[in-house]
Amino acid sequence: MPESKKLYWLWGAIGLLFLLNLATISWILLRPKPNRPNQPHSEAMLIKRLGFSREQRTRHQAYRRELRQAVRQHEDSLRQLRTDLFQHLRQPAVAKTTIDALVSRMEYQNGQMIRLRFRYWQQVRALCTPDQQERFDGLIDRLIQFQNRPNRAGILKRRQIQP
Image 1 (cartoon, one colour):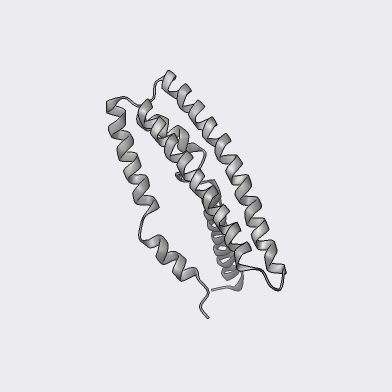
Image 2 (image 1 turned 120 degrees about the vertical axis):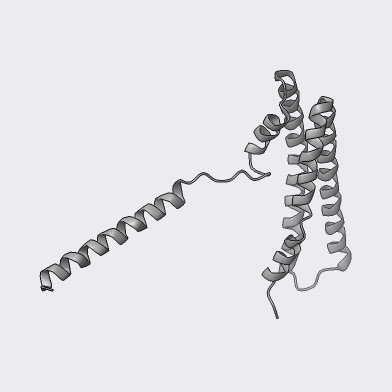
């Protein structure tokens, strides 16, 4: 085969590979992202799956706003406590009681946030009609399975640094 014909096929192969790379990169960047429970779309998903009426949506949005406002205060406090705790790393010796006190206050803040979220879910369930409550219970069951899936602990153990 003549040398010019070989170069022609070589450039054609390079061009084809380049186009395939562009197509793959485009597909990766432009594909829709899946919805995850903690993303902002979860509120819309809940409303859609339960089939809320306009009045239910309005009340749900008010409950959601109240929850965000109440939880934000605890998150801010928890963030400050975490900062205070890790500031003690710079000190050569820290009293155990100091650390225990900070950790205890952090546990209290976490507990308060869990209580607020639980009350929110109680309000949402009370807002539902009996038919919607069945669907709500199914969604909560799926949420519990997601939260308690056994491989989460396995993933964390694999990520730990081995000595």
